[in-house]
Length: 60
Image (tube, rainbow, N blue to C red):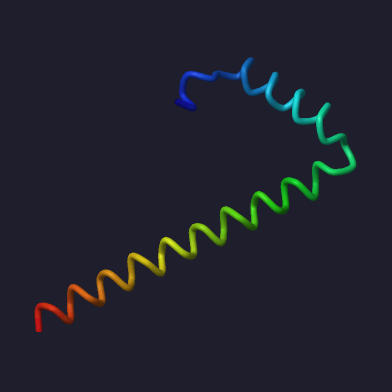
């Protein structure tokens, strides 16, 4: 899906975001999105590790 957007589409999306949130809130918005992605990534890693541990215990 993201492959079909292209550079002009991304520029339009960024301009719309800038208009909606304004330049003062963009750093806060970016930071919160980054923290959310990091938390999601950490959670998925924990789930994968837990599943691998369960598989190892079942083999023994």
